[in-house]
Each structure stands twice: as C-alpha cells, then as structure tokens.
Image 1 (tube, rainbow, N blue to C red):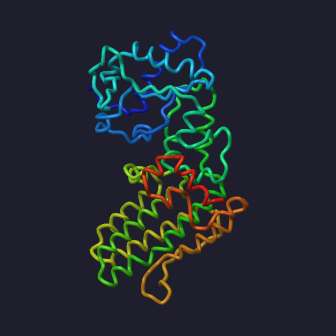
Image 2: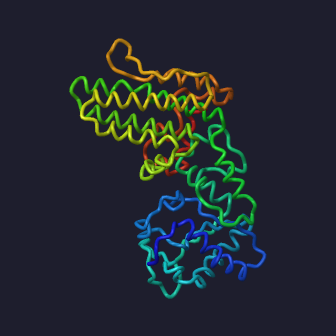
Image 3: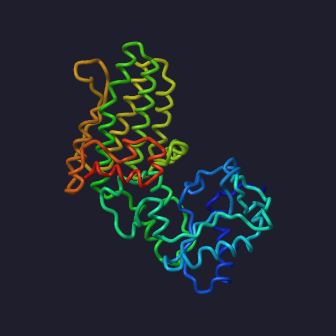
Length: 360
C-alpha cells in the first residue's frame, strides 16, 4: 500500500478523478450530490494508518440522487461503477470484499465498492430521523446523539449538484438553538453539582477505588461541558478524548486531568479537581451568557468536602431560557444521550425517537 492519506481527502480525490467522470459519461444530465457524511473515523478526521485495515479506502462515497431518480437509476449506477472503477487508486485497493478488509482481490473482475446511492431524504431520515431542510423542532436536537451531528458537521461535501447538502451542513454547523444550548449547559452543570461531593465521601470511608471511579466520572462530565461551551458536538467514546484534545481549553485542562487520574489519594485528587472546577467556571464567565458568577470552591454543606458552586451556574443558565417549548421539558434531564448509554439505543434513531416522549 502507498503512504497513508487521510480518508476524506482520498475519497474526495477519487470522486473527482474517477467517479464523477464515469457518471458524467454514462448518466448524462442526471443531477446528484456527493459527500462523506456518515459513519467512519475518516469522516471525523481521526483516521490513521491503522484505519486502513478495514472499512477504509478511496471508494467510499455517499452519492445523493433526486428522489424521483433513485428507483430508476440507483441499481444501474451501482452496476456501472462495479464494472468501470479501477481496482487501485494511488496504490490503494478500491475493492471491499464481504469481510470488509481492504484488499485488491476481486470477485469475477468486478469491484465491490462502497459508493452508496441514496437520496437526501432517505439518507438523513435513516441517519438522524429527519431531513434538516424540513426544519428541526427544539426537541429534535435532543433525540439525535451528538456523534451523528458531528459526522455531518465534520464530513465533506465533494459536489453539491442538488444544492442541498451544503445548506444541511450549515444548519448543523450552526449548532444548537440558543435556548436548547442553555438547557444542555444548565443540565451539564447540574450533573457536576449532583456528584461532585461523592469523590471525597468515598475516600473518607476508605473506598479509594470508588473515589477514583467518581473522579474520572467528573472528568467526563467536565469534558462534555467543555464541548458544549466551545459549541462542538462530541463523538463516541473511541474518539472522545481525541476530539477533546482539539478544544481550546484542553491545553490547560489536560494536564490537570492527568493529575486527577494519577493522584495518590483522594485528598490530593480533591485539590486537582478543585483547580479544574475553577477553570471551567472561568470559561463560563468568558461566554458572557449570564451575569458574572465568582468561581470558587466551597464546603459541601457542613461536611469538609470541597465542591464547586455548580448549581449557581445551572440556575443562571436555566433562567435565560425564553422558549416555552424548552421550558416545558423536565429540568436537568438533558438529551437522550445523557440519560441513555446503550450503543444499541443511540445508534438506532427510531429507538431514540420513542424516548422523546419525555420532552412532551
């Protein structure tokens, strides 16, 4: 194989140099768009040479046809591409056999590619449950797991002959509506408020393992708060830390998180957690979305456990919500991805939609 090239760039070049000319010659006058917006580490921009061992290669393109053209053309386009695509592109196989391993072995001389013919409506309804061009209600944003929003945001539109994909990407890139954002920020601060004293309490009774588990849980909650404050969707667990490292706040917080994880005892851990809480409180104030709230660490009621005044930030943010639909939602619940951690649920938009009843 040739030297590693980021998958998105490779797919984009393959489309322009190989796929587009074939479609223009064989399907004259057919309008379409092309992109990579769905699953895949390369869509997030996090693929590495290790990614080349499966489900990776140049012949991965999402090809969007007009809805009226889909039934009559999708099968023919697939057949033509199987017959005419080259077996290699820049030294990398274009074939994907059944076992998904990138290889140059062909079946009967035909290319088993991953150029997926679909339509705007079919793709987005299957992927996130709706077509953003038809409008998103406030609650719709809470049903879609951030991972899916991130892939649409970070993916690439190679060609937009239908003049719709770029508009959809712009809607997602514009991030959550303001009141939905306030709701999610408020909920995230509440999550920190609810559990921040437990790390010390576990340590106080000699449960160092429990204390460490909670301290890492608090890191996770702070990281998600940081994604929200920097208006970025977070990806799923495999790339969560990598994506966090790209945030502006990571330069300061990553060394503190390392100290928390490696602390020898709970009292030392408490000191480092306090530093992290102070810093995220300072970030909040730079957003200027509420009145200034003094960042400080206080005792948990009458107990000698140090905690942030996270409930103050939560209340201040919630007070800024004006939307009647958002104010009807149960407080402190957050998105489906906050109260459900099952991959089998979050990866199935129909399951997520069933849980949306909680916002009614």
